[in-house]
Length: 286
Image (cartoon, rainbow, N blue to C red; front, side, top):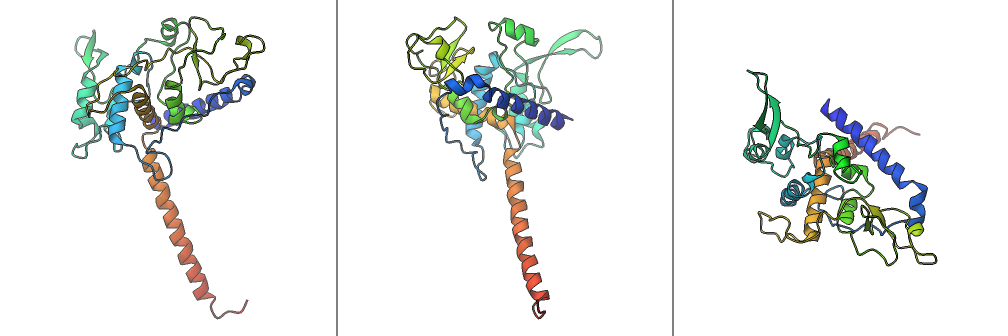
């Protein structure tokens, strides 16, 4: 059931992303071509860098999670094969010591089985990631009317995937001279949009568009990486983009490996079939 729900949401989010990309207003303004993050998981043979996933999770947890939920993610998923905290020595993801420690850092609303009273308990591996807001209305009210989107499948919902996220996070620049903006708008060179109506008459239309989210990675050193990597704005953006890409499809590497296995089998089967054909019909006139 969980897989079905995830696939359904991926399809809906992808359709929404395509719909936005096809909007007429975007054709006039456009945006910069997306930056290439050089991610290790791109291509048919690519795999995720576990160290980068761990750094990306830390950026999400300490920076992004204050506004953005990941409602489809559970802590145990972090310990699955290919995940940021996978441990081959753990009996299963739920028994992974790192996962259990990360889950225990949060408090979860629950009901006491004996008294029926509401309680707060430490999280466990089976718990979903907590949401920063109780509902969509509260999220919108706390963010100037624009509710921060859930990031569970964000990399699948936007053309460019991880490169889109990486570009947006590093695309906040000084607004072009004369650009009319409100206090809740921020200029981003990689955000699709049409800025012509907001520029002085006769002025060149700059690339990019408005985004409601203030720059989340406004300065270096917002997190301290455990592996000693320097937490520059660019590094944090790249790491969290990789983590969100993994979270959007945790079994992507397994899927690609299975596909390569199927192609190898089909190639072998085609070779055997051809040899058999030549052997069977060797002395038969055509």
